Image 1 (cartoon, rainbow, N blue to C red):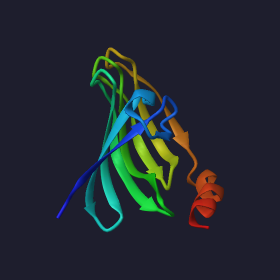
Image 2: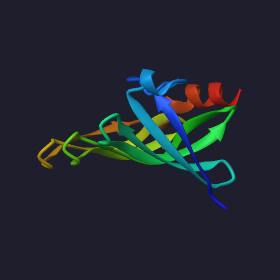
Image 3: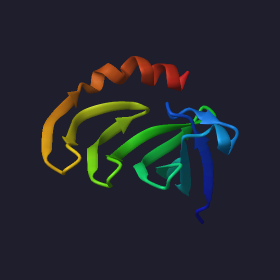
Image 4: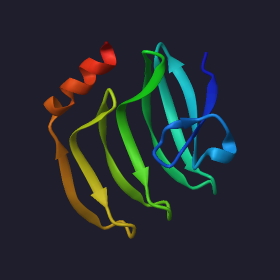
Length: 119
């Protein structure tokens, strides 16, 4: 059985209590265990991102594939998070859909952050 919950986020994607303080709204759908699917929209209803989160140590952490969008709805970037840290190759695009140079994030660069999250 899945259920949804909504969080309000500031411009840095930090959770805030009140909608009037928020720049974004994150709708989380529980998929089972500690896994959630999130859709983040700005205050005008434009999609900002969608991706997978895990709930660990009393907070939601990006973990899995994510897609970020330009204001016009075109894909801005696509890649994977590992416990809150970008890892591997991220595809990037201009607002007209034309590809930009991709970025590579070394998986081992996330190790110190993963350790801090686990503790």
